[in-house]
Length: 197
Ligand code: NYM
Ligand code: MG
Image (cartoon, rainbow, N blue to C red; front, side, top):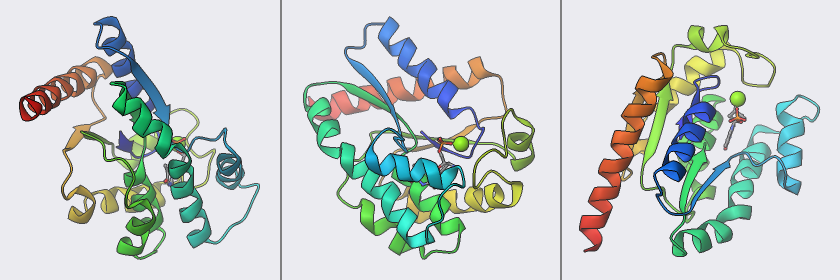
């Protein structure tokens, strides 16, 4: 899932994971980026909490390196038949850095070659809705102006090219959103199955 801050993506990605586990979907794994637990993730966490200053280009590369740290294990899990649900991925990396003024194509380049998701859910909310939600403003980027620019970047067709992209209105009831995501996941699974058979 890809999104603005406080759009409910963590809630939704965990709800999806719980549902798939419950219905016996096979092995399901939830993960998130940034993964703040790795060495690179520790630096990213400090940066987001404003305890470390880094040039925009450097932090962009760190976010990407944080995904590459996990790439091998993601591929192994997928090969073993595990379904991976990911709370943010490379799409957030490009949208947030491009929102700061970095060149869009330059931002895409370090993520080239990472495993590509079967479906992407972009939960969009008005920046005012995000700002009214709990804890908004604690971290770097959590201000209405930046969120509006990030939202703009998420509309760029270069981000959505060649991927199975879904825009999801994040201002609605949690259960309504969950049902919409679930229906799309089932459709995506059916089409993957028919392509493989
Ligand atoms: N973020 C996240 C980036 O700027 N680049 C990235 O590659 C990724 C994965 O980190 N404001 C930003 C978006 C968020 C922040 O993410 C932390 P979260 O999901 O709010 O913990
Ligand atoms: Mg956040």
